[in-house]
Structure formats: C-alpha cells, structure tokens
Amino acid sequence: MDSSAKELSDNLDNEYETQENENKNFLIGKLFYFKTVDNKSIMSQISEVQILMHQIISKGHPLDESLQVSYIITNHILGKAAEMI
Image 1 (cartoon, one colour):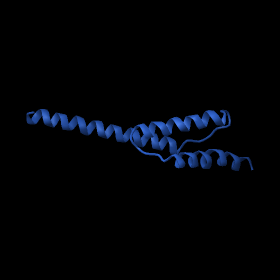
Image 2 (tube, helix red, strand yellow; image 1 turned 180 degrees about the vertical axis):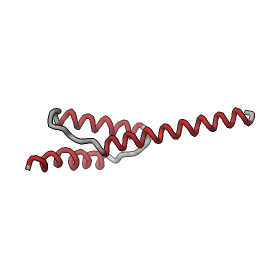
Image 3 (cartoon, one colour; image 1 turned 90 degrees about the vertical axis):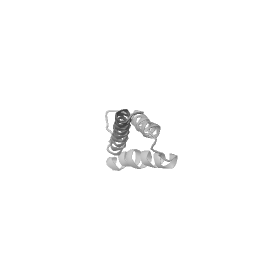
Image 4 (cartoon, one colour; image 1 turned 120 degrees about the vertical axis):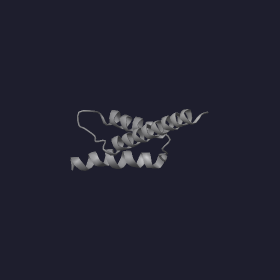
C-alpha cells in the first residue's frame, strides 16, 4: 500500500472509530436522561430502556445484568413510586 492509500485508510478508520464512540456516548446519554411519563405504560417504557441497553451492549460497551436490573428498579419503578407519595 502506498503512503497516500495508507493515510486514506487510516483516516477512514479514525473517522469510523470516532463515529462509533459518539454513537455509544449518545446511547449512554439517552439512557442516563431517560424519564418515565404518565401517558405510557410502565411496561412499554421498560421495554424502551431494555432496547437502549441492548444497543449499548451491541456497540461493545458491557452492561452487567445486575446493573441493568438495578437501573430499571431504581430509576423507573421506585422513582415512579416516590413521585406518587
């Protein structure tokens, strides 16, 4: 591979890696700021959270199963119960 083809290949690799990292960070941010709403069922909202978690995992960012369960319980089920009190 000549130097200009190598440089082009390296630049494309760097661009792809940057986009992947930005996408991963976007998904993590979306999960972090996810809020439950009253006009949707709790089950559909938990499903949305699970889809986000699966997308994050599929991008190569590990999420321990106990962390996933803890996140759902703490932020959505208990959070909703605390709002009702």
